[in-house]
Image (cartoon, rainbow, N blue to C red; front, side, top):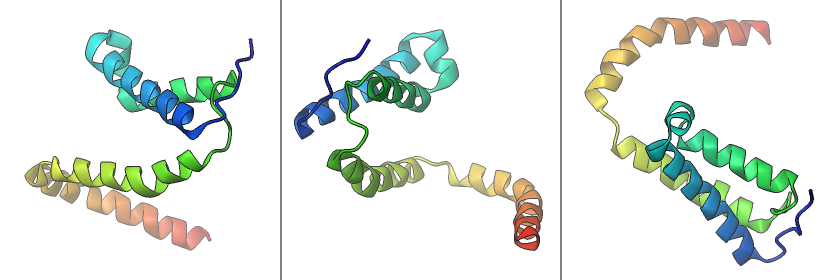
Length: 108
Protein backbone atom coordinates (compact mmCIF):
# COMPACT_ATOMS: atom_id res chain seq x y z
CA UNK A 1 0.00 0.00 0.00
CA UNK A 2 1.81 3.09 -1.26
CA UNK A 3 0.22 6.49 -1.73
CA UNK A 4 1.39 9.25 -4.01
CA UNK A 5 3.55 11.65 -2.03
CA UNK A 6 2.29 15.17 -1.49
CA UNK A 7 4.43 17.29 -3.75
CA UNK A 8 2.97 20.71 -2.98
CA UNK A 9 3.46 22.65 0.20
CA UNK A 10 -0.29 23.27 0.50
CA UNK A 11 -0.96 19.54 0.39
CA UNK A 12 1.66 18.97 3.07
CA UNK A 13 0.09 21.67 5.25
CA UNK A 14 -3.35 20.15 4.72
CA UNK A 15 -2.19 16.65 5.69
CA UNK A 16 -0.30 17.92 8.76
CA UNK A 17 -3.34 19.93 9.83
CA UNK A 18 -5.52 16.86 9.35
CA UNK A 19 -3.17 14.81 11.52
CA UNK A 20 -3.40 17.49 14.23
CA UNK A 21 -7.18 17.65 13.95
CA UNK A 22 -7.37 13.86 14.22
CA UNK A 23 -5.33 14.02 17.42
CA UNK A 24 -7.57 16.66 18.95
CA UNK A 25 -10.71 14.77 17.96
CA UNK A 26 -9.38 11.46 19.28
CA UNK A 27 -8.44 12.98 22.64
CA UNK A 28 -11.89 14.49 23.10
CA UNK A 29 -13.99 11.67 21.64
CA UNK A 30 -12.31 8.33 22.31
CA UNK A 31 -10.91 6.51 25.31
CA UNK A 32 -7.72 5.49 23.51
CA UNK A 33 -7.19 9.08 22.34
CA UNK A 34 -7.60 10.40 25.87
CA UNK A 35 -5.17 7.77 27.15
CA UNK A 36 -2.55 8.56 24.52
CA UNK A 37 -3.08 12.36 24.29
CA UNK A 38 -3.62 14.42 21.17
CA UNK A 39 0.13 14.94 20.70
CA UNK A 40 0.87 11.23 20.45
CA UNK A 41 -2.10 10.54 18.15
CA UNK A 42 -1.07 13.43 15.88
CA UNK A 43 2.56 12.30 15.70
CA UNK A 44 1.65 8.67 15.03
CA UNK A 45 -0.82 9.65 12.31
CA UNK A 46 1.78 11.91 10.66
CA UNK A 47 4.36 9.10 10.86
CA UNK A 48 1.89 6.73 9.24
CA UNK A 49 1.25 9.25 6.46
CA UNK A 50 5.01 9.49 5.82
CA UNK A 51 5.44 5.71 5.88
CA UNK A 52 2.68 5.10 3.34
CA UNK A 53 4.10 7.86 1.16
CA UNK A 54 1.29 10.39 1.49
CA UNK A 55 3.61 12.92 3.16
CA UNK A 56 7.15 13.58 1.92
CA UNK A 57 10.03 12.62 4.21
CA UNK A 58 11.55 16.08 3.72
CA UNK A 59 9.74 19.35 3.13
CA UNK A 60 10.33 23.05 3.80
CA UNK A 61 7.02 22.98 5.67
CA UNK A 62 8.64 20.97 8.46
CA UNK A 63 11.20 23.73 9.00
CA UNK A 64 8.42 26.28 9.44
CA UNK A 65 6.70 24.00 11.95
CA UNK A 66 9.88 23.52 13.99
CA UNK A 67 11.12 27.12 13.83
CA UNK A 68 7.85 29.05 14.12
CA UNK A 69 4.96 26.92 15.37
CA UNK A 70 6.63 24.84 18.08
CA UNK A 71 7.95 27.92 19.96
CA UNK A 72 4.48 29.48 19.76
CA UNK A 73 2.92 26.29 21.11
CA UNK A 74 5.39 26.19 23.99
CA UNK A 75 4.63 29.83 24.84
CA UNK A 76 0.88 29.13 24.74
CA UNK A 77 1.33 26.17 27.09
CA UNK A 78 3.37 28.31 29.48
CA UNK A 79 0.67 30.98 29.53
CA UNK A 80 -1.83 28.30 30.56
CA UNK A 81 0.45 26.83 33.26
CA UNK A 82 -0.52 26.96 36.92
CA UNK A 83 2.56 28.67 38.34
CA UNK A 84 1.69 27.84 41.96
CA UNK A 85 1.55 24.15 41.09
CA UNK A 86 4.81 24.44 39.14
CA UNK A 87 6.44 26.01 42.19
CA UNK A 88 5.13 23.26 44.53
CA UNK A 89 6.03 20.40 42.20
CA UNK A 90 9.34 22.01 41.28
CA UNK A 91 10.56 21.92 44.87
CA UNK A 92 9.97 18.17 44.99
CA UNK A 93 11.83 17.60 41.74
CA UNK A 94 14.79 19.91 42.32
CA UNK A 95 16.95 17.34 44.14
CA UNK A 96 16.37 14.45 41.68
CA UNK A 97 16.94 16.80 38.73
CA UNK A 98 20.16 18.14 40.26
CA UNK A 99 21.45 14.61 40.91
CA UNK A 100 20.63 13.57 37.35
CA UNK A 101 22.34 16.64 35.91
CA UNK A 102 25.47 16.14 38.03
CA UNK A 103 25.58 12.46 37.11
CA UNK A 104 25.36 13.33 33.43
CA UNK A 105 28.18 15.86 33.73
CA UNK A 106 30.30 13.40 35.72
CA UNK A 107 29.71 10.65 33.16
CA UNK A 108 30.85 12.69 30.17
